[in-house]
Amino acid sequence: MDQTEKLADTLLRSDVLREFVTRRGSGSAKEDAWEIATGLSDILESAERLRDLVASLAASDADHSDIEDALNAIGEEYRHILYHIRSTKYFGYVQPVEEE
Image (cartoon, rainbow, N blue to C red; front, top):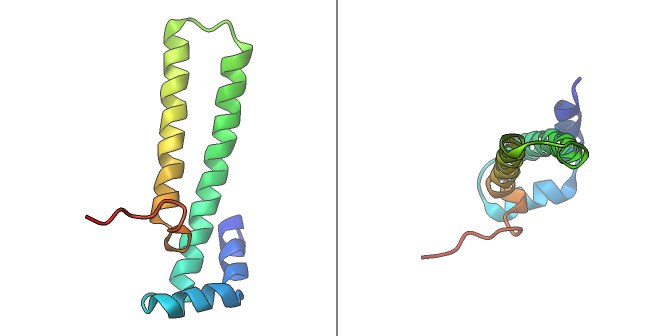
């Protein structure tokens, strides 16, 4: 069993997740558990890549293009993390959708 599956199984035992699904009135606890678990696993991977990118950026005598490449890679990891924050219904309060 991989980390994402273990997280999903743990979350499925959570009363708070089942209550959240009931209040929302749609979806299922299983879907939300997998959504949260996948997001957390992906964010953890991005955080590990960020740690490596920042360490290499700080430790090197990088030239202009190396610095630019590292900053672009960091931005893409930020984008990936933000995607998971926005797409995980349970954590919707972190960045609420603005009403038009």
